Length: 533
Image (cartoon, rainbow, N blue to C red; front, side, top):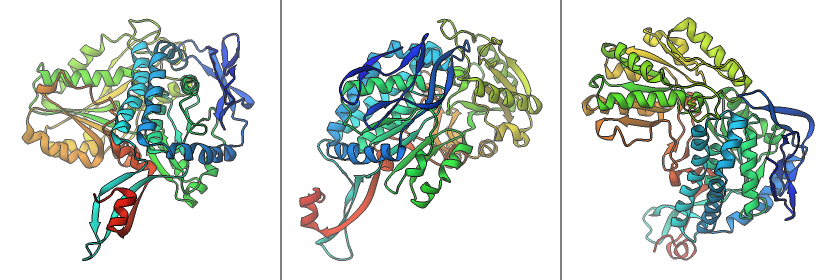
């Protein structure tokens, strides 16, 4: 993969120079591709362990790069109407989709993904860009938004107030996780660009080859205004130290790193807006009314197995805790094990493979530590065979009857192909309390055909989760599953999950815009904002 694309001066050049097939990745800053400096960091194929790419520190003045984005990209984006920004997103979506097969191969070599898992990531990227393009076209020729209707001030009929939403004057800094280098980058960027903010994207280093290749495709389209997009590969350096009051940070990753981001002195001093998506001990709950073998029961099994195995369990929305009524616990475990026993673990290049390796050696070590903790706290009921080479870990299912007292299960997220079954009495209050032991999650799924039981459970789970998926007999074959993030629905969760909120259609733009109340004569507001007509 040594693609020919356009540089900031419009001249073709090789952006990724390599020897013996090893690609040297570059950052894209100040409208040009920048060589890194310092020691090389090798990036390995998680399947074979072979080096496929290298990165270095950016070798650029990041304060200057941020200033360039603010002063060049910001005004150009803000000057476009929403429909113009939407046209950019549509073109970028087409660029990703058009290179789909190439990107699948890059994903496999740099992230160890199966073809199915790579498509899930890459198609999620193009679909989210396209979804926000559709939203942007619907917003038309405006460059700002109105928030509600004009409201009277005191008793005056002429003196009114209108809330408006305008793009912020800074840079949207996006720090993305290793598990979705395509989708994670695109979903954040789509929302920020439509809102009118330039983007500086910082992909996770281990899977950055896919992010870099997509960035090359985007730059090559010529659609992005100069300064609207920057890409920083390798270490983040002092990036956060140069942020100011109009900048935003959207972070996806571990809670420990999230605390470091939030505590950065510049972020604290300038009250920089920060959105965090962190750890999540997502739950799947089987209702007491569901009989083994029913459509709803099968939906529960299929969704749980998909979440445990898809992307080798490396999804922020993957189920980690599976709550089943004690009366059917053995049946539920047997059904899960039966379905899991058909899972094939191996080389992601083979089309028959269901689960490949985790993304890198550090991730493998982390999952193995989590498995060791679960071995001491629960009973292993199933484990797949996995290759001993590369970054493979064996997909596993555990069970504990300790309920609330199973501290490891409720407090430690094992970010891999692992889940634990926890029986409960069948009482709604009990299972809501068990779910809450996770401290807040991205998604909870409930499987029940009894609204009298499920209704209070759904509402009881709501304060603890950003999204709830209610599976039942009538939709058993119609849902994409709880693990799929949709552009029209909010993505995020309280507490342990980071306290953030992304996407959600128009709601996502609010993070990148300033809400301001303008008080004035009704006629003047109408002339300037079109607010009261």
